[in-house]
Figure 1: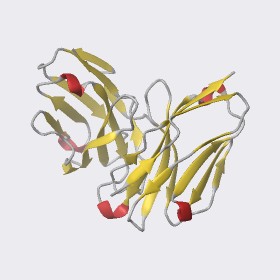
Figure 2: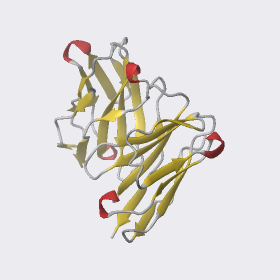
Figure 3: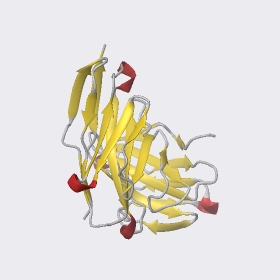
Figure 4: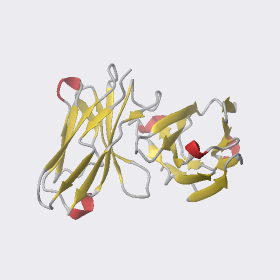
Length: 115
Length: 116
């Protein structure tokens, strides 16, 4: 079974530029998460999807961040415009169901550097 | 509020030593789930174990074992006879059912270095 696939693995952009990350979850997983991981810290949830619906986006900075999950499968996370403080690892995860009843599986992440 | 504390920032051991990673959690939920993940240098978080709040049985999987104690709100992880390949950052995480978000609350992580 293929794992969660994310691309790109690394991205370097200048501040104020837009950037997008892509995630393909494990087949059959209805729940998809985007997490932000700053250096030396644990991941923090940005947004959670149940199929196509964003059921928790309370931590997503909506002035510059947006996400979508078309057809309830792949998802993209966008930042526009990027700021220096956005430099971090962006992790995508998926699980069969939400609410913690099943474990979440993570992708390798996208390491973003804003210069 | 929910919180996970991993007080050990870094641990260094010599191969074949046993090592215990501590995890203390806070939650008002009566039903919750606890997890351990491993993050090797490649960056991917690897799922190790999930435990629900009603199951306090300790679990052993090969060289790994987990000690869940509700009385002390702890979910500690022990690696027996550590190996160099165990070197990684280990995260403890909590998900409370009443929050209804499925959000994982992670600790700060413990960096384990196993020296040959």
